[in-house]
Every structure is written in C-alpha cells, then in structure tokens.
Image 1 (cartoon, helix red, strand yellow):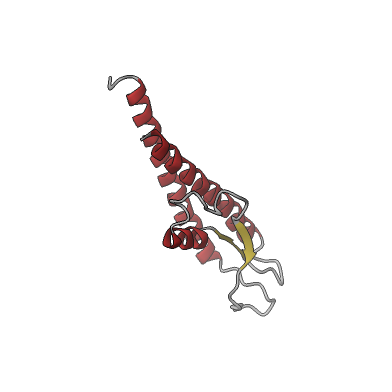
Image 2: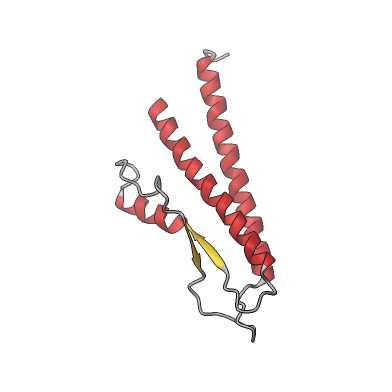
Length: 126
C-alpha cells in the first residue's frame, strides 16, 4: 500500500509541476496579448501522460514523465486572426487559466487527502 501511495503521490507531483508551469505560460501569453508577432505558448504534459498510460510505461516504472519532459512549445496551430501576427485570444487564455486553476486545486486536494490517510494509518486509526 505504501509503495502504491508513494507512486501515486509522485504522479500527482508531476501533474502539479505541469499545472504550475502552465499557469506561468498562460500568464505570459496574457501579458503579451498586445505584442506584435507574439505566438502563444502551450505546455505539453497530458499528451505524454496519455501515451504512457496507453503503453503501460507508467505502471512498469519506465515513464518519461519523471525527467524534464514537460515542455513549453509554441502553439502548433497556424491560427492568427490579427494582422500583427499575434495569435493570443485573451478570452481563451482566461478560460484556460480558470481550468488550470481548477486542475491544480483538485490535485492539491488529492495529495492532501493521501497525506491525511497516511497520518491516520500512522496514528493507528485514531
């Protein structure tokens, strides 16, 4: 049980790292909404997680997610609805920021719950 709890905690920590980085990147996108030629940035993490869950690498301990594979890339879409080449849509970024905040808070609640369970076990159920 302890190894399973620690494994889950480690995965949650990587998710928290990705959410924290995503918050920073979205904030940079918002700050550059009026910068001509700026291309919005995105964080790649869930794509890696999905691939590794499909291939079973996570359960075998061969995950790439424990390295530095959370990446910041330029938005691969060629959409730019503005004449100055900037492709940041402030409404979209604000929605992404709200969703990311919910994701981060959910992960924090999960890890806090895991620590509460561990604390309960250490106390002997009291």
